[in-house]
Amino acid sequence: MLILISDAFAPNLPDQISRFGEVTDDKERIKDVDVVLIRSKTKCTREYIDGAPNLKMIIRGGVGLDNVDREYAKEKGIEVHNTPQASSIAVAEVAMALMLAIPNELMRCHTGMCQGEWVKKQIKRSELYGKTLGLIGIGLIATEVAKRAKAFGMKVIAYDKYVDSSDHAKLKPSAEDIYKESDYISLHVPLTDETKGMINKDSIALMKDGVVIVNTCRGKVIVEEDVAKALEDGKLRGYGTDVWFKDPPEDSPIVTAPNVVMTPHIGASSRENLLRIGDIIESKLEEFTAKNK
Ligand code: NAD
Image (cartoon, rainbow, N blue to C red):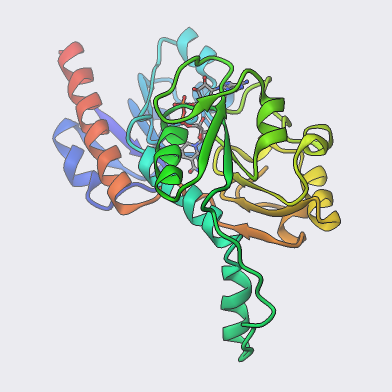
């Protein structure tokens, strides 16, 4: 069996899975590959799949499967797996880091210090304590965010189109309720036809003045131009984002908008998470080998 490691995983992964077959990172060998291991960079489109006639299994280390043409893979009899349970804590910690950086003006403090400026008097901090956090989606990651936000003394509310109970957030009947009531909004939905562009000028208009939005789900869940404009107008106090229209962003108005805290899609990239993902990949390969003996 030829296993292609196509994206960045824990450095020990090749050794960990070598007992299942030959492990390569040479993408030129795609024609002969049986199993491909991807994260978000490799796009398993119809063309990609057509170029891999031997392919039997795709394992996406991480959550979102929007970079895999699942329907076409199914048509071709290719198994597709992801590792949704592995990444929740890693992403939730990045969401909290972004959420904390904005009211504490960490970027301004840090840049000031780097430039020899003592910005103490200009900084107008505020606290998360006592504020309302609205979660859009209350799945695995949002639940971890909710637990952490509660530890900070936040009131946590959530809207999820497909979930009607949560032990960690008070559920609201519509996204509009979240927009109207929240001081902080954290986005945790998959990218689908329903969620694409859901944060736009109309939804922003419903939000409180000075709201902070944190996005660790997908860049396309927002309309970048509308968010950038709301930041310029001061309607949004801040936007913390780990995710982009395109990795890395090209000509994104978010990059140059004021009061943005940005990370380069590192949500799932903690050392601990990559090790957890490696363990899940190992067990998927075990199951696959047992089935195909
Ligand atoms: P999850 O499936 O556990 O939770 C997603 C939730 O969104 C579900 O409860 C679902 O019912 C809800 N939802 C779906 N459509 C909705 C809609 N139209 N309106 C309201 N709610 C809706 O997934 P998760 O593990 O919490 O991950 C959430 C997303 O985070 C992933 O889909 C992925 O895009 C993103 N993600 C990003 C990173 C990163 O590196 N930044 C890493 C992992 C996941």
